[in-house]
Structures are given as C-alpha cells and as structure tokens.
Length: 194
Image 1 (cartoon, rainbow, N blue to C red):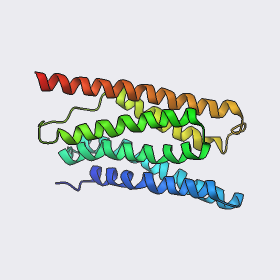
Image 2 (image 1 turned 135 degrees about the vertical axis):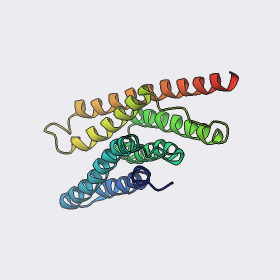
Image 3 (image 1 turned 180 degrees about the horizontal axis):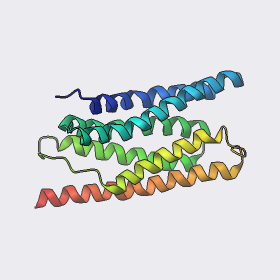
Image 4 (image 1 turned 90 degrees about the vertical axis):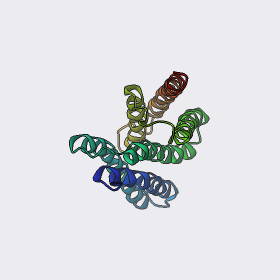
C-alpha cells in the first residue's frame, strides 16, 4: 500500500519545503515589520511541521510495520527538497557567496545521490539504508535552517557572529554531505562489483 501515514507525512514535507520557502521569501520582501513577522511566522510553522514530520514518518513506519518501498524512496527525496527549498531562499537573500558555495555543495550532492538512487530502482531489491552520518548531515542542515530563523528573535541575532555561526553550520553540513555522498557511492560500487 503506497498511502500510509508515514508516506503521507513524507509527501507533506515534500510540499511544505517549497511553500515554507515561498513564505520566507514573502517575509524578506515585505514592506512592513508586521507583514514580515506574519510571513516569517508562517514559514517557521512550515519548517517546524516539516521537521516534526521527518521524525514521525520513520518512527511510525518502524513502530507500526508500515515500511514500504515507496516510503523508502520518497522519504529521502522529501528531506532533500524540504532542506534545499529553505536553504536556497536563505542563501539568495543573504547574498553571501561563502554561504552560497556551501548550499550549492549540499544541493549538488543531494541531486547526484537522488539520480543514482533512481538509476538503481530496478537493480536492487532493498535500497541502501540511510547511514548515521547522513542523519547527522540532515540534523546539521535542519539546525542551520533553525538557527537562521532564530536570528530574527535572538538578542544579538543581527550581529556578525550570529551569521558566522550560521555559515559554519552550513559548511559542517556541506562537509558531511560530501562525506556521506562519497560513502554512499562507495557502498554502491562495492555492491555492484561484488
């Protein structure tokens, strides 16, 4: 069965990322503080709901034996679209090349791995499991997005150090992206060559 609660949560996340990023962009483009705050709050709500759905879909699938091939395929794609949507909006708005390079590295890795996953759909009976390092990568990405949201409300959030923390988080996520991408490709190479 394709439509289980875990897959519905993954599909929600697939949609929530772009919608949340559009709301974040609307906050950036707002002419008044009240309007910006309203859009920022909506974007944050979509981010929190998507983050919670990321935790819940896997837990529910395992707990209630609703693991499916479709769920194993759509969950990592939903994660990538969700994260990329917010990171693109944040990267464009800040205009910082150093942040843009990290975001580009994260997204490039995700596109490559997704294309490799699709190319192997009929070649493997069970897709390679998501590694613990990949889960840490996603945690750093979500943390970077959450930190960016927090900058609007934290005392000193507009200080250079606060933005530097965000950039460091992005680069840690980019480094983990490179590492997990290479280990995933290595694991596929090993299973392909026997």
